[in-house]
Amino acid sequence: MATDESRAETGREAREAAAERAAIAVRPEFRSPSGGKKEKVFELNGVDVLYSGVTAVKGISLDIQRKDVTAMIGPSGCGKSTLLRCFNRMNDLIPGAEVRGELLYHGEDLYGPNVDPVQVRKLIGMVFQKPNPFPKSIYDNVAFGPRILGNKEGLEETVERALRRAALWDEVKDRLDDNAFGLSGGQQQRLCIARCIAVEPDTILMDEPCSALDPISTGKIEDLMIELKEEFSIVIVTHNMQQAARVSDRTAFLMVELDADEQNRWGRLVEYDETEKIFTNPADKRTEDYVSGKVG
Amino acid sequence: MAEPVRVQYQEELEQLEKSALEGLGMVSAALDRTLEAVEHQDVELAQLVIADDDRIDGRYLEVHQSLIALLAMQSPVATDLRLISALLHVLKNIERMGDQCVNVCKMIPLTGTEPPADEEMVKRILTMGRQTRTIIGQAKRAFEERDIEMARDLVRQDDVVDNLNRECFGLALEIGDDADKREWAMTMLLAARAIERIGDNAVDIGEQVAFVVTGLFREFEDASHPQ
Image (cartoon, rainbow over all chains, first blue to last red; front, side, top):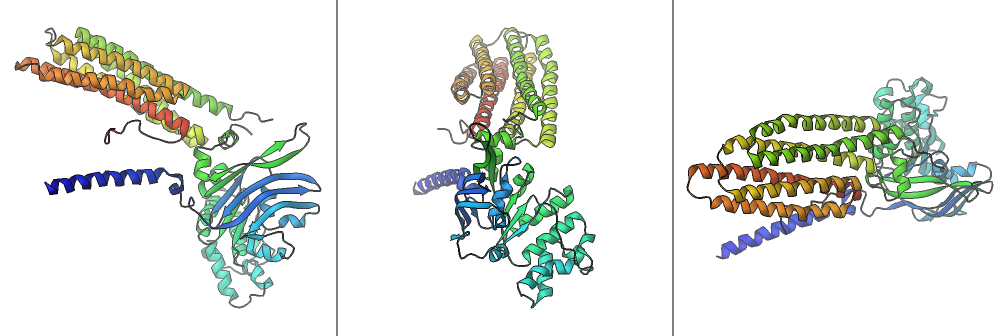
């Protein structure tokens, strides 16, 4: 009798455990590895960017999490690239550009008076739409950053390590002294990524890094992004919806907003969530219409 | 400001949904004929239902192929992706419903030419069939109108079918010792069971309605853990 009771108990417990597992499986915070609490790299609170007094993006508030790939998508002119350039103070180089609001980097004000923009750009590297290697050898391209920063010791190891991490080493190890312009477009872009990571940044910003590349090269860069996020936080601007879906953990959708008389336009953040949510069940109709390609 | 784009793709998706759901109309027609064949022990009509199932299978293959092509070429996301996923499920349900009608029709020659051994049992099977037909219509409307409440109500409607099926089982148990009668009852029970499964398939379609609307899949009723 006692045995029967204990069997019944075990059965009930098993069912309860199964129910609990099922509940966990569907709770959003357990659905994705990035769903839990992660350290924040950037915190934006009400960020506006203006060019010569004209608002380009307005009221952006979002957190970028460490070792995530965060994608920013939206139609042309919605301010994705403008926003991306705020993350490493690239907008400082544009006359008349102004950033308002709070932009924290690891809890520190990125636009504080004592922050050195050069130091910022060392920690927060950038890869551009078009591969832009220097007119130098492959080796010198990667060694450029460490040399400027005075890290001349173990330079060869640094270059090899960066090229390996950029998945380019095997293709160039026998011709490191060749001019970088001799590489294919995809190789040049990976060289730019190697150059970026040679200075051991904390975050890599990518502004449409694959838009000038063929699908194979694009695939290699996407594989690379997934590997690189083990070590770096990545923020990518892309027009390629499927690329955002394939590589990113979280996606921000921005769109253009017009004032009442349709004279002025600026970028607004519409929705920011886990990528899976954005592409399977977005909360905002405007996101849905954009990711489905129903509205241009 | 915003112009609709990819209009052709949207139209194609709408047309595919329409074609898939028309499959439910085809199943309803097959079920009507099946019930008529059961009622009149009409072997010829039963053969017609069996032959016509190719049309339901053809619809399944045609729409399934087009949906796969749409997935490959249009990279649908969000509601469109959920709709396509749901339609693939619904198509399978429709194909199974057609097969269940065929299963019933295959039983008809086995019931012989003598009058039914138990009129009550036939009456219940016909009532089950008519109720199932109502359920199929409701599942179609719930899908077209994306109406979760109407979809949930399918469970209640299906309970009527399940109860009638249980009653058939009870009647079969009481059919007596005559071997021919018992064989007849067993055959009719299989027919009842096939109709009962059609109802279950319609409830599954209701669950897909909820998935399309909410993005979350939940069984309305869990057969392994009944409430």
